[in-house]
View 1 (cartoon, rainbow, N blue to C red):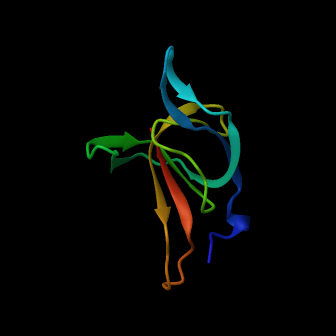
View 2 (cartoon, rainbow, N blue to C red):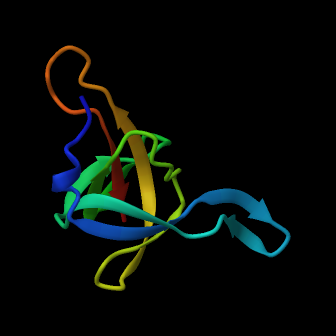
Length: 104
């Protein structure tokens, strides 16, 4: 079971982080992602295990690509960066499969 499409009421633009190029960070083309956006400040762990303040989290369909350091533009126009992205698999528990993306 996946997250119900009717809950994905927001749209964000994700520019996937590709690595470092000759002139700095390199990003892929922006992709519009339907999601459920939660703007809430909380303390999370980054990919290296350090504690980071997250100001927003969005939940999207499985298969959504938003690696750490990707740029994200929120519906308000605010630009932010991905701290971490997690695939959430509910297995046989009846909870919806989805991708959770924590943002700075």
